Image 1 (cartoon, rainbow, N blue to C red):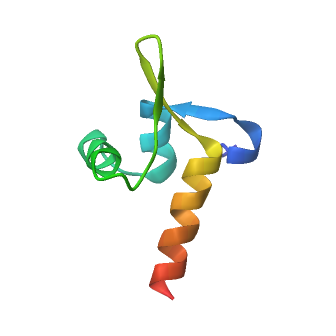
Image 2: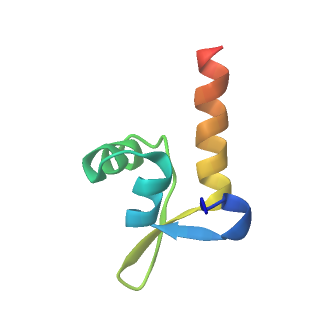
Length: 64
């Protein structure tokens, strides 16, 4: 069963990579450029489900 952002509040980096089907380098680059916002808790970096949905919606809108 595929993971839906509706089931999650936030994704760890590895999970976000899998969800977006991108490499760690690509995800790091998107974060550095400010295209995807992230936050840290302790040593772990997270991306909110809402942020992933926004990023995908923006990309879809730009493609049409």
